[in-house]
Figure 1 (tube, rainbow, N blue to C red):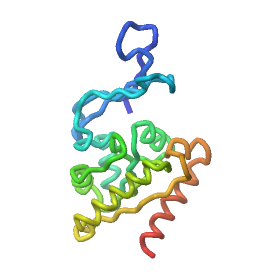
Figure 2 (cartoon, rainbow, N blue to C red):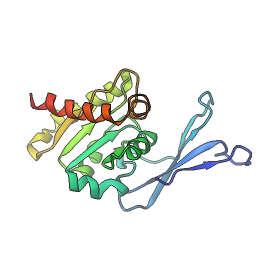
Figure 3 (tube, rainbow, N blue to C red):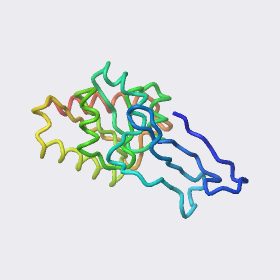
Length: 184
């Protein structure tokens, strides 16, 4: 995933941060996203200015597998993508925050028809899922053959937390449950 770390002892604005490059669909660098290792740091997250609604983290790496499977798993951030990828889910991309845009949907629709919305299990994640489902309904995306499957994670946990606490098996169960609920 091309993540890096800038040591704290360097006299640089990114010192003490994990650095994640954001690429476009063709692999061209668009921006940098960083996270300070100190959870209490006043500026824990820092992003270069870019329009997050136009990009999906890791789509440049995952697009072929997404197309092969006709499925994508959408998560909020870069660390969730990395954790899911390590847990052998190569069809995952991040929305660079909690808001899925119509433009991002159109990018993904080139590669698949089945969208699994696996946003965090907190209030913000539930609201992100509701916003995505509203876009789906308002724009009648089902007439284009698209299917959205909300994936319910345990309260207050993100995909990375779920994998560490419960393992890959629970993620697989949650994905299957979302498909069953949508078909019933």
